[in-house]
Image (tube, rainbow, N blue to C red; front, side, top):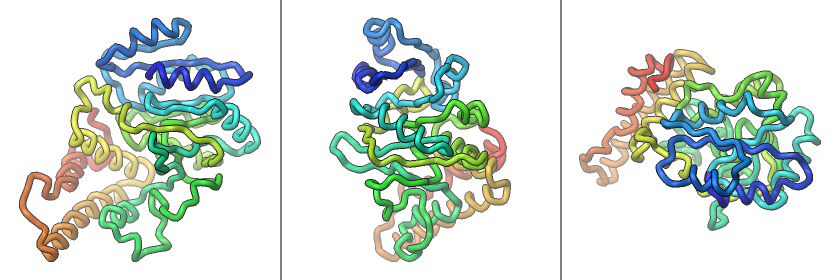
Amino acid sequence: MSIEAINSLLSSKGDFELEIFVVDNASKDDSVALIKSAFPKITLIENKVNVGFGRANNQVLDLVKGDYVLLLNTDAFVQPDTLAKSLQYIESQPKCGVLGVRLIGRDNEQQPSCRYFPTPFNLFVQRLGLARFLPRLQLVDDSDCDASVSMSCDWVPGCYYLIRKQVVDQVGLFDPRYFLYSEEVDHCFAVKKAGWQVLYYADVTVVHIGGESAKSGGGVINSGKQLSVLQAESELLYFRKNHGFFTCLQHVLLVILADIIQFLKDIIKFRWRFNSHFFAFSRLTITSAIKTRIGGVPFR
C-alpha cells in the first residue's frame, strides 16, 4: 500500500478508533521500507511470495477487533469523509452485510461499482456485444444503472469493501481457492445466501486507479495473458462451487461458441486474419477446465 493511500485513510478516520493492517504481497519496490519508516505503529504482514488477493486479506482476520472490516486496495484513495459516511450509512441499514461505494478513476471517469452476478449466458452475451438485442437481460455491469442512486445489488468490487464483523464471523471472508478475480463475487454470493444485503452507497466516492494490486507479481502475475488465465480459472471455480458441474460445463461451451461466432463475424466483415490471439480465451478456458477438473479444484 502506498504512503498516499495510507495518509488518505488516516485523514478520513474522524472520531472513531481505527486499526490498520497492511499485507505486502511480495512487492518488488521499496514500499515495505517506506511504510515501516513512515508508520511504525501500523501492523505490517510481509509475504515472501504472492499468495493471492483473497488469501492475503484472510491473513488479518484473527487480528481484527472492531465491529467492521474495511478492505482497501493499494490503488484506492478515500476522501476525508469516506469512512464516517460509510459507517453511518451501514449502521442505518441493519441488514447490510457488505457495502461498496462509488468508484471513479483519476480522470473522474465512472467505474463499474454496482454489479450483478455472472451467469454463463450473460457473460456470453457481454463478450459478443449482444446486450442491445436483450434489453431485459441483467448483465454483470448494468449500463442503465444510475450511479448517483444508492441501491441493493449482487456484489461490489473489493478495492473498497466494508463488511460487518458479524458477517465475517458467520460466513468467513474469501475462499482461498481463488488466487485473483471472483473472490468478492463468491463472498457476496455467500453473504446474500446467508440472508444479508449487499448495498451500493452512491454518496461516497473513492478514487480507484486500477491494476496496481496485480503488479506485485512475485513472478506470478507478469503479463496480460497471465491475468486472463487467472480470470478463466476463477470463473470456472465460481460456477462449479456455486452452481454445479453442468453450469460450469455450460460456461466452457458458451466461451467456445462465443469465439466461433466472433470468428465467423470477422470473416463476414473481412476483418479476420490468422494470429496468435485466435480463439485465445477458448484455449485458456479449456486449459483451465482440464487443470481444475471442470472447476472442481484450483491449480495454484
